[in-house]
Structure formats: structure tokens, C-alpha cells
Length: 415
View 1 (tube, rainbow, N blue to C red):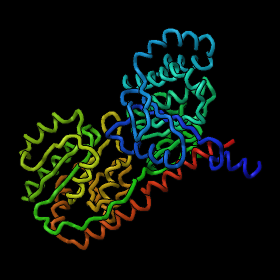
View 2 (view 1 turned 90 degrees about the horizontal axis):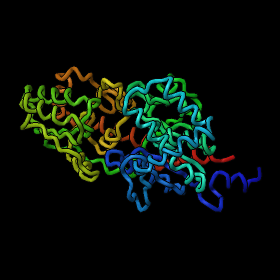
View 3 (view 1 turned 180 degrees about the vertical axis):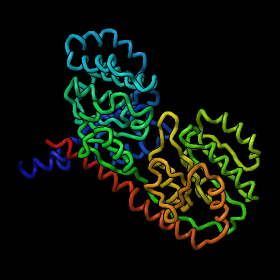
View 4 (view 1 turned 135 degrees about the vertical axis):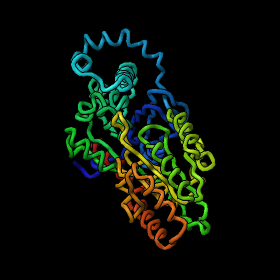
């Protein structure tokens, strides 16, 4: 291949930018800032993006329209399904076989996959005409199902991202292995995710660990000099896998040790009524505030005032668990000390005694003892804070990680 042709195939010299259709479950989603950063980063890399939200979302993001899939359009499947069954049994037969020979892990995952299949059926004419260079599924649930079926119908190449929810919820997505087997590459953001995918049977050479990224690194503020009353924060959806009942018991242990503190739990979710009841039962009303959902600027304002962030993640009864929540590196870069449980991938960032502290969630007194110690020993805590910031600078550089993902797209799209 000539040099100019090679350069053109990698997107550095070509008459038109590489067009990538990004498929999301819901976009933009205020709790999924990592996907918003990814979109901005890929646009910054020179790609022309088409954004599709399969459920909710829509509108405009960063000056670009987001095509929202209307549920009413699923009515079109009344004639699309018979047409596919007759003309493309090679596609329909796979879906039909899956429906009757393997149970979905749960009703939600069943309907997620049906949504992805419905999207592909309805948008088949659109993609046949527009022919983007690539399709990328931002999740391995509904978006990957849509990309997989579009690939089967149109031969359209695709890649997929596999997050903790896709891998672990009720044992993993219904058609996870089939979808990832035909993806050109798979993006995951943790070593834990890569290991689990390999254990499930995904081809190791296709899996690429690329961390999420920070758009910029704010200045690391100094320790608060007066920490007689500690400021503690937790930023999490109020769901089972966050282990917030354990966190409230830690706060009770702190109160019982006569430690002065105020704690804010920022986020919303179905666990809120139960947590409100626990706060009352444990007598924590003067110490703990459920702040609800806050926008990013307000979250950063809370981090700038906090002494420590507590993350008490667990494995939920459904099997779901965290990967490496973005709030942990965000706290680390802001100079907030982090205490976490050993579950999931948080320990990829937090090494006990080096970049933070790691304790079992069922030892509230141990957590309380470490939190209580934050009122003194500035030298020790500055050492940990600086080590934590260095880890984030090495691993969460948004520009550097965006280049890695962009390189995957360019190489995959090249002949």
C-alpha cells in the first residue's frame, strides 16, 4: 500500500472525516459523565459522530443532536419482523433460537435486548442509506444488540464497550458472548473487567483496557488545617451495590467514638426511603445529609470542601458491582483522602496505605478509627494524597486515553 493510501486509511489524510455511529442506552445521562467526556474526546480527535439514544435522553449535547429512538416506532416491527424472517433467516433465526433455547437472566435484560433488536430493525433502512464507517456500542446491553444485528443485516463493522453492569448483573448480559464474538474490538476500563470477560470466553486479543479520563486536572488543594469537625462525602447512586447501609453503620461508629463530623451522601436512587429510615433509627439526623442528585459543578464544590470520600461498594444480590467509579479518581485528583471496600475494581486505584485505605465493609469500627485519625498527622495524609494524585495523573489523563481509543478506531477501520 502506498504511503498516502496508508495514511488515508488511518484517518490522518482523507477527504472526509471518519464517521462513527455511537449507540447509547440513554444519552445524555447526568450520572454517566464518563460517556459525555468520551464523546467530547472523540470529537476532539477529529471523528464525525452520530449519536443515538435507544431509551430516553435525546435533544442536544455539546452542540450536536442526539437522535432519540421513539418507542412508537416499534410498531413498525409488525411488518419488519415477517420480512426479516422470510428474507434474512440467517439473522432472524439466531434471535429466534436465542428466545426459545436460553432464558434471559432477568426481565429487564430481556427487554433491553429486545429494544436493541427493535432499534436495529427500525433503523435498518436509515443505516443502509447513511452507511457510517463504524458503529460503536457504548454498552454491551441494548446498544450492542443493535450493533450486532446491524452487522448481521448490513455487514456493518462495530465495536462495543463492556462495563460492570453488562458483565455481572444477574451473571451478565443475555447475548453477551455472541455480541462480543463478532465485535472487532472490546473496550473495558478496568483490569477486573478484562479478566472477567476472558473467564467468560471472550477472545483476549480483542479486549483493550483503556481507563476513563479527566478533561483537566484541578489544582490539588492543601489539607484543611482545622479538621476538628471532619467533612465526609459519598457520591453514589442510592442502589444496593453501593453498600450505603454499611456506610451508615460506619457513621454510627464515628458518633459512638465521639468524633465530630458531618457527612453528605450525594445521589438519588431506589434505596433512598430505606436509607432515610436507617438514618432515623441510628440517630444520625444531625450528622448525615442525603443531598440528592447534584450537577457536576456542585459535586466538585463538595469535593473541594471534603476531607475524605467513603466508598462502601459491595456485590449486590443480583451480582452487579462497581467497576472503578469515576468519583474515586476525581476525589483523588482533588486531594480528598479515599477509603474504599475491597470489592470490584476500586483497588486498582486505591492501594491500602499508599493511595488511600481499603477495609471490609463489615468492620465499621475499623473504618471509624481511620476516619477519626484524619484530625491529625498531616505528613502521613499529605504523602497519601500526593501518591493518589500521581496515580490519577498517570492513568486518567483524558487526552492520552482518548488517543488510545481513537487509535483503536483508526486501526479497526483501516483495510
